[in-house]
Image (cartoon, rainbow over all chains, first blue to last red; front, side, top):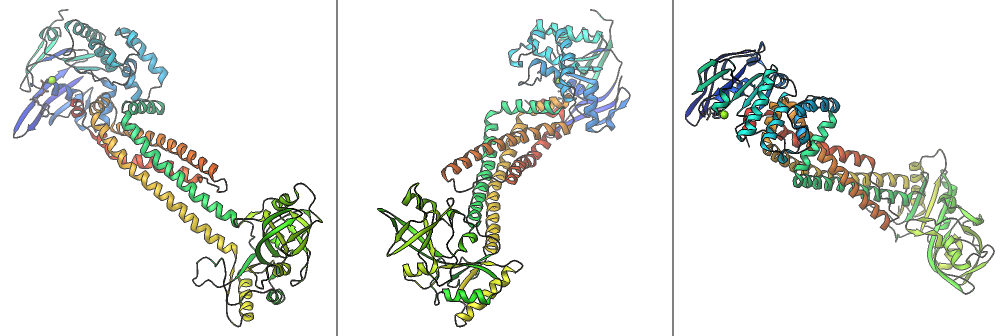
Length: 228
Length: 402
Ligand SMILES: Nc1ncnc2c1ncn2[C@@H]1O[C@H](COP(=O)(O)OP(=O)(O)O)[C@@H](O)[C@H]1O
Ligand SMILES: [Mg+2]
């Protein structure tokens, strides 16, 4: 589903240039479970943002489900994000003035789905993520784990093919971290392509494909039998 | 995004930034309120002036002694002229100027009118029977002054409603004799209604034949003359015919002022309309100034909600949608401010009508719509730049900001 070839991204900071992505070549099939690890500053987030069409590479090719994304304008990229890509961030990025339910509904609302259909679509997700009881709470009334589950709910409400998670457990204690990981893995089992950036070795080693980045380049790309 | 969702989302956002919203609401509210109040004042003044002259028909012409020196100014109220206008001249006018159909000369004065032990200081108007239809005054009881030759006096009077009540209470006035200075007049008619005009309350006046008034006050000249132009005659043409005749009578000197209220009114009307527009413009300026506030507040809001903008983009909101969100917030607050301003303005206008019931204060409908449109339009124009800034943000950069 994803084909990346010869992709570079450099940032110029003062008089030093940082090669955040250095000649990346990747092929990802539908339904894969991939972890991306590596030292801080190695380009993990940059890679994820590029795959999520939040950022543009300087050069190279990136095709998503057969669409060459480098030729798309911003509106078309927004449409691909809306329809095919879900994001989970370390910092949750919930809208503070909206309830858990409304946050989950947000993508549907932006897409113009009527309220009743939204409620139906969201009810099952809230249930499945174990936050149905907290649906009418504001984010600041929720624990970190609950917040991240709301964010996950929001990321999958449009039924994307690709789920990108940038250190989703980075702000969580180990128990809620494990719960969030399990939720993400369950989604992957249902067919979504899951790519998780993580610092946590034990989490990274759960993935069947592990990519290691160093200085913007893919240093290792290994496939394993699913352990768990 | 559905309209209802859009409005709700914007309202929630506005509620989060209460202070800024309140500031904008106040600014727009004051601007719109100013337009409402100022145009109501302008319209009130216009209505008041027009109402004061409304009793004069299109086909009347007023002549008074004295000549205004500068064109376009107000005619002299107390004309001190070399030549007075006399009754004899009016007789000449009636004969010599074909366009004049009716003519009501006026001699004015004040005097004590008494009946038995009751006495009232009244306005005394010496005139002819033609006066009442010309001024659109109705006789409620009895009859009009008799048709007399201009120079002929007679001891009869028509009195106003209030004067009648002051002297006779609810008793019968018709046929009674009242005293004015050394003369006695038999009441033949009582006026209907309050007859308020020119700021003078005609219902407190007594009307007697013009020659009798000249005798009572020992005056020769007329205070003014109201003339009615015959059907199918041009008012302006008759005016100049009268002027020519008067000039002839006054040894070639044109020392009378002749005005047609209709022409005067339309001048007044346009002056007052311009005034209303002018004060509306002052209100509008304050509205436009509030636009600068709208811009700053929206700018602040965009800065503060950068991460939210990044998120919306990550969720697939196109740039136009992000722009719409911020424009909607600005338009909503402007609309709310406008409604608030209208309520406030109307309250003030209502208070004004309570204090000055004679002045028809009223905000014209166009001012309401224009101020609402201007408030929203200004908000949209000034919010556009910051909203476009939000729309143009790179999603990855926006998301990174805290
Ligand atoms: N917007 C940016 N401007 C300048 N440098 C950046 C920017 N984003 C990332 N970088 C740099 O690119 C490199 C890779 O960053 P990142 O992808 O965030 O690393 P990681 O997520 O692996 O910690 C780092 O050296 C970082 O400083
Ligand atoms: Mg990172």
